[in-house]
Image 1 (tube, rainbow, N blue to C red):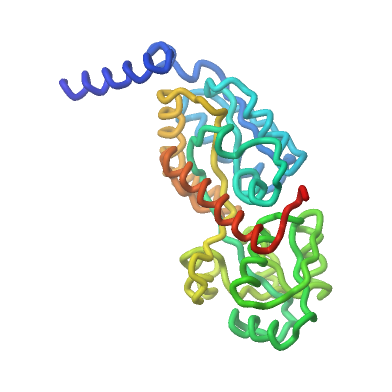
Image 2 (image 1 turned 30 degrees about the vertical axis):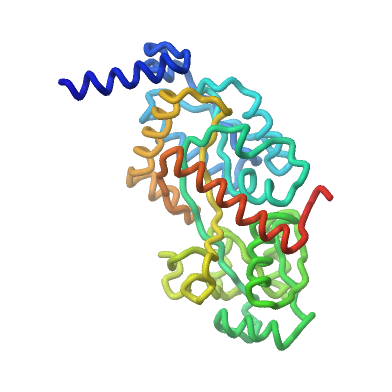
Length: 326
């Protein structure tokens, strides 16, 4: 009884300190929540958002209205969210582009990925995978590195676009190995795969979900996945870290952020229910379709993760002289 009274007292004190009536904090959410996905409908990010909010809405007792706002590499969606009232009724599915690579590669980004947002929680992550055209005479990461060194200027690699994770991950690999390959940026991952499959380019570092159909068809060969451990979908493929590339934990990740200044009681409710949803086996199975592994975090942990990811890619962008706004 004393413990319950003490906990209730803390909640009341926190709400009062923020100028938020306790009754209002306890009543949240009283209506549906706007959930902004910063890409067009139909892609992997959109599927993740709709899958998560379906389960999350049941945990909150209120539905989500998913709104796709594309354009500007996610910048328009980020600005829209940052300008919204910090009341918990507007959330953004931030991901590695909006809160990782774009802040690192754009010196004139029209939002601050840290100051303009409140971290709510992580959804999950999927690795990238280094793949090569099946005709290339290499069968391992070590052989590919050796081939690049023996054939300077002969190789090119595709990416989903300048400053994308597929671009920066390969640049990180080139920096770590002292190798060279010409970067060919495309407008999306699909056309990049078209040229890789035809042999116009030799390698790429796509997200695992996009690569799996081509790996299973035998038209590309996987050499390594990013992250610390092997992935269940490619049990015979080593991780970059396992292969000796320390700190090579680049990930395609998805999380949730709110406008800056979100009251603590509302933040706590959103985080707790999000994490509870991620523990459900049905949601885990649905996210597996995009090779996404749920990765629950509290707001502080997620905020630290975002800052470290921005710092990682900022170092790469600086070392490789990548500034898309220069």
